Image 1 (cartoon, rainbow, N blue to C red):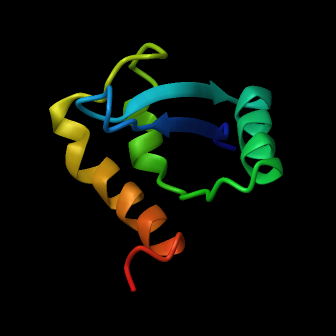
Image 2: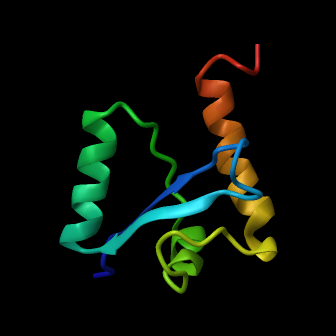
Image 3: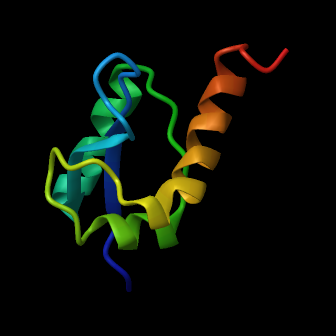
Length: 86
């Protein structure tokens, strides 16, 4: 059975050039990241492949250019969920 992986990204257009990795974990840590997202009503997007790539990044780092397309799809989904795509 595969271990669960979870990551949290943040993007502040005023200070960030690209989204930043703010939380990352496997197993119990991943479960806690997901629990906190639910508690704070943060939408969750499942993308196993992207999560695997994010495992190689240190917390606080902006995502590398090769992940821009995958991460932009996540942020586009969030934008639609918040009513920005109407």
